[in-house]
Image (cartoon, rainbow, N blue to C red; front, side):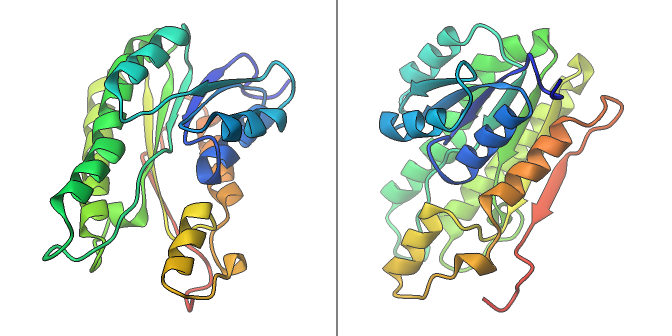
Length: 236
């Protein structure tokens, strides 16, 4: 039997990119996966790539607290919570509008805080595991990404604090910090800057998914806390 057979996982951002890749990898290892994202059609497309009965599409706008609470009520049991959804914006601190920062805070930090609160009682019963898909900017800030980086630094603090609080309950907490990854978001970013997009020189979503799923399957004598990933090609 696959190592995660009988486990229930919930993955946010499961309609594309890293979230979708993690959902597919979890399913291939036997887990039943609850797919969460804003766009129902994307979630349904992901679900069609999974074996019948192993996927459940749960469209939700995570900027809406009521929808997060509705999600928690709709998923009675949970072994694995993967937080891969988020928003992205750039701009110098001197001129980037505070409204853009508020949007990033709401999507990247507030929503994940409430998701953890809502699902923590279910995770304690298992005990389960939590995975935060962060970013390399959650470890080191760069010019023009201060808003995004600040929310990711906050997300790392949330993960670190959660780990210290719930390890005694048997819950493992992992933060993953990928560098540039070949996702639709990054493709759009390159297009907006008029740059050539070469996805073969970037991390692949499947690379991140493989690391996450391997870590989730480690014996319970071990906990991996932080993983930093980056493309092997450094010149792009």
